[in-house]
Image (cartoon, rainbow, N blue to C red; front, side):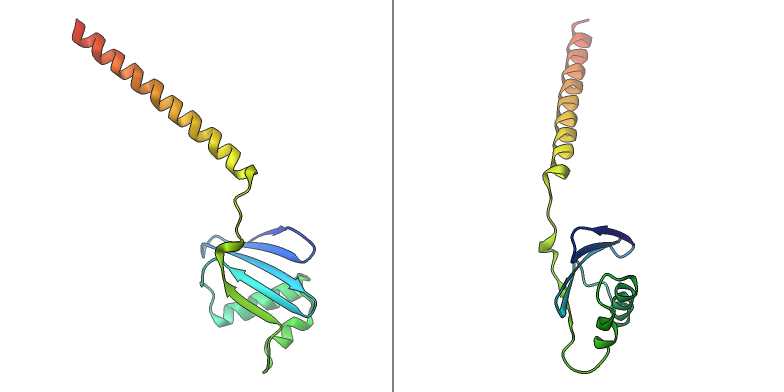
Length: 121
């Protein structure tokens, strides 16, 4: 699991073995956990909440409050819309694709020139 701290109350976690990204937003008395895919069982969700509380990402009382009956202070959502593709990610991808297209064009022109030169002989 990789952790990216993105703000005071917003944290992102990556679970590559599950192909899932998780965002945790902790607000006053309430936490929202958004996952990109529904890959956690109920027991795994409880363990994740315990880990969040133990590591200080959410207040410790969320751990025991989420196991009691009644309204839970933690809301799980399956919502990939929080993912954003930033310009820092797009720029290198754009440069690579431009390089790839130009290289393919140059290779194609070279192969066509070799083909024409081979027929002329």
